[in-house]
Amino acid sequence: MRLMRHLTHWTALLALLAAPVAPGWSQSRQLLEYPSIRSPVVATRGMVVSQNEIATQVGIQVLRAGGNAVDASVAVAFALAVTLPRAGNIGGDGFMTLYDAKSSHTSVIDFRGVAPRAARLEMFVDDKGEETRVASFGYRAPDVPGTVAGLELAHRKHGRLPWAKLVEPAIALAADGVVLSPDEAFVFSWGKERLSASDAGKRTFYKPDGSLYAAGEVLKQSDLAWSLREIARDGAKAFYTGEIARRIAADMAKHGGLITLADLAAYKAVERAPLEGSYRGIQIKTVPPASAGGATLLEILNILENFDMASMPLGSAQSLHVMSEAMKIGYIDRYRYLGDTDFVRVPLRGFTSKSFAAERAKNVSLERASRRADQPAGDPWAHESPNTTHFSVVDDQGNAVSFTYTLGADFGSGVMVEGTGILMNNQMNNFDHESAWRAIRAGQPLPPNAMAPGKRMLSTMVPSILFKDGKPWLIVGTPGGGTIITTVVQIIVNTVDYKLNVAEATHHPRIFQNNTDTLQVEPNFNPDTLALLKAKGHRIRSDQTMGSAQSIMIENGLILGGADPRRPGALAVAQ
Image (tube, rainbow, N blue to C red; front, top):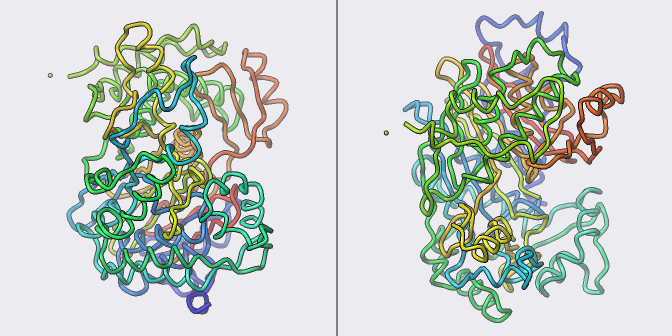
């Protein structure tokens, strides 16, 4: 393939040999003593860390061609739509937190999708009020996608290189094809039922006789290449008002879907002020609603500030107990109060305040796990004053991007729009349909995340940037559905409280606790630790790995990249 001949795989060692050492950095101590068995990739100019090695290399090539962090992010996002189709997308949505070094300004590009105008609650629940498969699979599951609009908005306001140049690598990958890894071949195997939702999906991802592509074979996506060429030439209008839009609307109408030309034409991505907080003096800038991720992240961290985490050994039953209890409280409050602020009042100042967290921290017992029934939601109003994928990028000017976007489930709704190669998301299941149905039946107010036409549904995505002395220190985020927020919490605790480098913090085993009574743990925890947690009353479930955090730390003038090994193909590369 043409592109692959230009994508050279560089190791951290080569980057170190080629790069000068920053002033004040003790090379002999850090690089020769190797104090950790988990060493990050090190750079002095720029870094790209993503879940897919080809996409990472695309971003690095953009940086080396003179592009900035936003340019590289646009190119990586389009490339992932080709190389990681279960999560990378142009038919999905997400959030992008970016720092502009010249102005020292941080903003959030909100390209979360919205409910189509024709969407109605009764389409997604049965006569008992239980959510049906329609919300998750097929032609009524997609929201109006925001990815292309979000990328164009970010590029128009912050990019440097020509738009079309940033889409070119993805076009080449789609047209020439990518060699399937064993992991990718396996994913197409277990995803066959979902990808059979549309004839276009079956034709694209499987051979004419219906058999699977094997690892080592080349998968071409000619229809997606056509769509990318349209977007390269005409920008977002190709997707929202051009021929791509017409094909989306026609395919939806043919199969009983909800998205219309009017829905697409009305969609707008928005640049917002970040939600701000702090943890033990480290400033945090993260995503505001309609993502619930930022507010819940800050509440959990604010609760943890009331405990001396550093005095509890890393990975000990006591530290895990306190974190899980803080997580449980955060998730209970999330479901009670958070929603799209264009539609509902949300007590953000109170929700993210230190005083509210101090009150909520009183509900954490150091000895016993609480039960959901014993943890009612708090009252943040009283504290008011008058699969998904993630990547991180830093450039040589100090600009930084934390970027998370999603199709929802792996391969989204399973629907590929005829003639476009575009997989559509299944984000309509992110609304709280069942609680809305119960509220209507009981004559009560609707929950804040109830569906409404044009409304953004809640998300757990939480691309964040942490600052020391006013400069970016940690660029962090992850996929993982409900585990996104808790994964980012643990990486922050690992780096701030336990002083781990970004690779150590990323590799460390994870837990997940939401508003239920079950504590989920990754498979590699010490059995003695789990026994102590059970003695405190925790109901333990050993689960699969959680998340795929792709993070960057900037320390002592060096850029340190940590690629998460939990999903195959992740790669950190130095500029």
